[in-house]
Length: 264
Image (cartoon, rainbow, N blue to C red; front, side, top):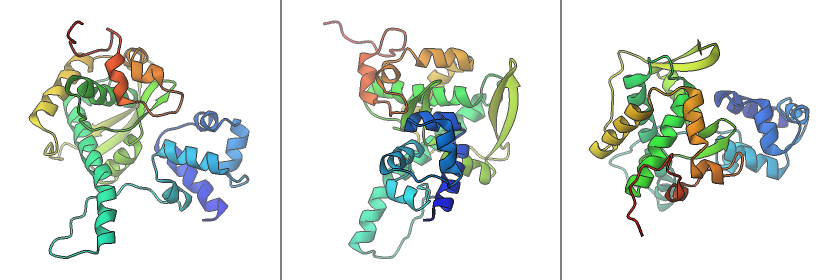
């Protein structure tokens, strides 16, 4: 892939995820002017820098170098025998497909319930998804979505969000709106009223849990829910721009723990 095409691909991926040049420059440990040269096709990426960007964008390294995204729609081919190599390839992509389906259904469920409330912008959605995922893991010791979240200045950020939301916009399921909330810029997503709600990938227990999270966190502002996430051990323990570890929920402080543990 040419330097110019890769530069354009990087810029597109950054904008899809609403990331700033300053954010990625900091993640790569370079200055913003140096990063701008990358997006302008005037500077080559080092292997370390390329791997870091691929990780942040949640794209396999080989795909990143070829300028390919990794989101695939679920396609079932029935009545045909496939070669062993083809079956193995499908196994490798089945897990992210399953996560993408549950991520989308959870997100659509949240938006259908409270997406129209004035406080529900992109930042609040990020944190709601985070607490839904990590609280469920603390309670039941199993994953609901099991999405990947990275640590940034404003709290946990779901890496999958930009890809899924971009696809949902293109399919006409949601509409992206720029607005303000108490003079702060806000990105909102409204569900198409003609879109039927599909929760087939979510169990009854998972839906009860999501409702519980919406009830307790759905009225918080972006500032309030971000502050709460900053108290949580998975976010505190992670390095900047690094993934948050689910196992750290078992070391949470009282402010964020959602499980009653037996006293020793």
